Image 1 (tube, rainbow over the protein chains, first blue to last red):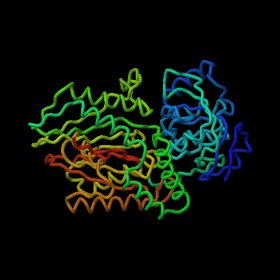
Image 2 (cartoon, rainbow over the protein chains, first blue to last red; image 1 turned 30 degrees about the horizontal axis):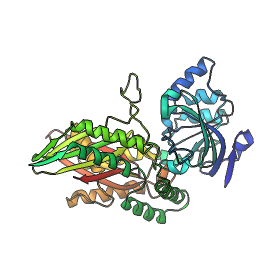
Image 3 (cartoon, each protein chain N blue to C red; image 1 turned 90 degrees about the vertical axis):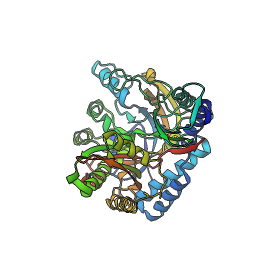
Image 4 (tube, rainbow over the protein chains, first blue to last red; image 1 turned 120 degrees about the vertical axis):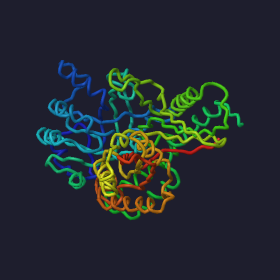
Amino acid sequence: MITLKTPLNDQDLDQLHAKDFILFSGELYTARDAAHQRLVKDIAAGTPPFDLNGAVIYYVGPSPTPPHLKFGSAGPTTSSRMDVYTPTLLHHGVKAIIGKGYRSTEVLESFRDHHAVYLLAIGGSGAYLGQCVQSSEVIAYEDLGPESIKKLVVKDLPLIVGYDVYGQDAYVYAKTLK
Amino acid sequence: MRVINTQAIKQAVFQACQDIQFRYSKPMEEAITHYMNQEMGVGKAILKVLLENSELASKEHIPMCQDTGMVVIFLKLGQHVHLEGDYVIDMINEGVKEAYDVAYLRKSIVKDPILERVNTQDNTPAVVHIEMSHDDRCEILLSAKGFGSENMSKLAMLTPAHGLKGVEDFVINTVLTAGPNACPPMVVGVGIGGTMDQAALLAKQALFNEVGERNHDPRYAQLEQDWLEKINASGIGPQGLGGKTTAIDVFIKTAPTHIAGLPVAVNINCHMTRHVHIKL
């Protein structure tokens, strides 16, 4: 099994190929619809709430953490809703994004142009994925509740490479059927 | 006349909202195991993770999915039932609110759909449909609808000339277009006939069927099986990464319609298809 650890460098990403199963460990930032809306505004204003350079983003709105566990259920949400924001994030240094589902052609080109990767988490395995979270901290937009930006430290998060730096797409077959 | 206190309805909703979040239903668990044994490679690995997820969710008492859904309820009330106590819709929403709080479920509802989109913080209101019947029954069909799959659902106002072929093409295309966004393997609810609104309701009601349950009309039962076969022959597979298991089942519900119309609605669910049928 291929392992990927933050901080990410270009060589780490070069070893990944579409459809590879990988285990991801390290830091990532959660963000979905509402957080992205604010994030791109803050980026435009020159005040992003965290350092985007080399960052990993996970499209997730976790369920609340029960008292007996470290984190709640935390599976991926549909990535295409964030397509409109993604090129901006990649342009500002984001190196990997975790989600599920198709991306637009423009977004895929943006991944390739910025030597970044799109990683897939298994939709509907939130209990499993949430238990890979070692620690979490709200770092921005706390009023958004499940949609706030959290910094997570994860260990052995199981992912599948969706779009690699060579322009290979794990969904290529499904796309021909659309 | 049968008297039912709305407190009993609230209690049932409170319990049901929790019961469906932490494990697959038995028929779904068996169906996924069955398909897993037929899959290879990526598809097999994904279905294995989904079964492990359900197992872990149940053991740790953590929801299977972070999107714990918008609660949709069909309340079936006989005309010989008298409801006493506080207003039934308020009591249903109280049940939802308390369940989502105590079970650490995600609150996913915003009050206004376009303007402020501020979270109501308690996962209410639920979507409640009331259906009358001639007897004294009181039944609650409750589901927690996730929006990855809800967003990929579609409705078409076809016309009689489209016929069966037009309906089939629309259903299959909707499922194929949904692809990985709807977290396949999916469960597909199809509503045909009525008016625009009724077709959508039929599609939603179809998702309350259990895996393997067939339409009472053998012609529609056959279509359910044919469409499932065609969907699974597409090769989209678990999570859209290839395989034989794109859908677990297809359910059709129909209603009389207008001489000029052929409404079709396709409501998609993911493999969790969280729902329960309670008889009070």
